[in-house]
Image (cartoon, rainbow, N blue to C red; front, side, top):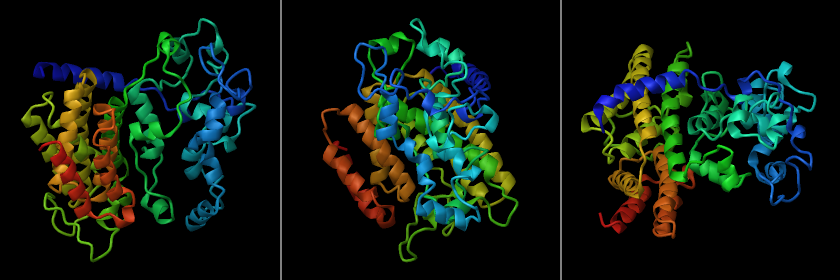
Amino acid sequence: MNKGLLPIIFAFFICAASAVQALPQNDERVHEGVASCANSVCHGRAAPKYGSDVNLNEYRIWLKNDAHSLAYKVLLNDKSKMIAANLGLPDAHTAKICLDCHADNVAPEYRGAKFQISDGVGCESCHGGSQNWLATHTGKDATHPQNLANGLYALTDPDAKAGLCLSCHQGTKDKLATHKIMGAGHPRLRFDMAVFSANQPRHYDLDADYFARGKSELAPADAWLSGLTNAAIGSLELIEDHFDRGQVFPELALFDCHSCHHGMNDKRWNANSTLAPGSVRLNLSQVRLLADVIAPLDLFSSGELTSMRTAINAVNSGSQASVTQVKAGAAALTLQLRSIKAVLAEASLDAVAWAAIRENMLKQAARGAYSDFIMAEQMFLALDTLNMAINPNGTYQREVDAIFATVKDESHFSPANFKQASQQFYQRLGK
């Protein structure tokens, strides 16, 4: 890599970041509601309309097969009622803290005539308020850039898509599944952009007219890396925003859940840790995995990698020392990751690079570096995507499945079993 380009790329990235599109929930445009898209002549057909630029059955796919359509309904079940009661809320389905992620919770003045909060995470939750693009996007000569100019959210931009997904699946400055919320019964959050996208039905076809309209689509491996990088930066930003609650304890949701939540006889001390025994680790799983992902690439010098790992240790150590120290460490590491992200965005990784990343992750897992569950989980999700990208014919699927068997139930996770399964896969690669 040309080191002289790094400051230029970094400066460009900072300028671009300052103009990031507002998330749909905050776009200050009228959200007309799912019903405005559901007509049979729009996106509500029972079956695809072949010969059309779009299939026109997108609403049906969302309604019947997409878990986002159930997000509001979840707030009405017994578990949600329990969580609300534990939090001292009248109910979950009217509480802003719940609706901000379980519905298109825009301000009342931006709710159109057909808008219903009970639609949950609907069309405009992701595509943005349709006030200005609803009428124009159906035009014969409509293009994607024109729709974006009219306020359509840029889901074809990997950073914009990752930012939107992570705003609920990880959290932001304004909304977070705190330790209090999880203590009340809310599930632990996790995210992998490639896997999560693959698990929901795609409601568009990657055909010629899709690209002719000016759209683009990342390959799964690229989507995974983009999601990982954005999640790593997001985790550090959450530390800066939420670590200090002005109380005796910091915000415990920022820490690795499994540092505490396992049996007292289940000792999971990681010999690779720089923390003292008994310390509670921050959840820097995405950051730590990203360091191992970029290590085998020739895009970064050994000095840069050493600096990154030193900074990771500084953030963890800072969490044991003072609020000022941990926030300063997180801010410094965020700057490093933003420059790394800019370099990765300019790179074009080939099959050799993806294979090197897979090999290094397995190498680290085989030596026991991922002994905590969240790291093991993140590594498996990445491995599943990368293995399909490298070996689309299904080679090594048995080895991937063996690793999955060790992480499918976090309550019974065995670091030794995960390490052994990783060693077997690593050995199959001839390493």
